[in-house]
Amino acid sequence: MKKNLMKSTILLIGFISFSVFASSTGILGTWETIDDRTGQKKAIVQLYEKDGKIEGKIQHVYWKQGDKHFCVNCKGALKNQPIEGLRFLWDMEQHSKHLWEGGYILDPHNGMLYRTKLKQQGQNIYVRAYLGIPMLGRTQQWHRHHEGS
Image (tube, rainbow, N blue to C red):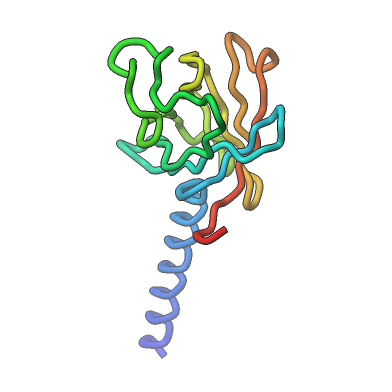
């Protein structure tokens, strides 16, 4: 009896630990970004955890004719860096189960740096980039990316 109770307790603790880990890392992984103005695919990005915060890098860009492949309008150490491989999102802290705030997002096409919020809803992330207050910004939708899609 004690043996079965101990096994059940260990399994329950393991399930709870996995559930907490899964919900806190649900945003991690590969996402396909969609242009909020055109509805076209823009890039594939990777979200990862570093020092307890979420960061992102650009893995692949769906290039259009005339696109610059380097961050020519960026400032400082980012200036003229290749866009593919570029860290473009950083300092995102989890504020609730599906909301991350407090960080920055870089638009490598114009070199602008924005405050940002990420809100995950199922297989989508809604990315709010803004200057000053969130009301003065734009929202872009990202979809969970699956290899081969």
